[in-house]
Length: 133
Image (tube, rainbow, N blue to C red):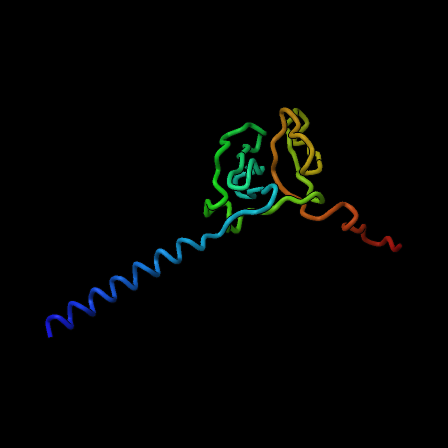
């Protein structure tokens, strides 16, 4: 009876460890060319197949070795993939108030501006109310 009990315990322990190892090998991975974090305003640009460079909302390079398996980058609700049709909203404080400009995500970060938001659709996708084509 004691041997049977030990066998069951060992079998359960081995099964749990095998399942944990199997679950870890199927991690989510970021595969896109660039991502934008709407919570922080950080942009992630692909360096290689396994790493991304992280830029602050002011365009400063923070890290060059963010792994594509990092949970925040791979499956966060705050991460949006940037495409060639994505636009980024930049803001700058002046004496008159806040000034905004909208640039393509592929454009260079303008100096002295902060990246605040993403517009995921192309400009052609936005229709003006009351104007029919």
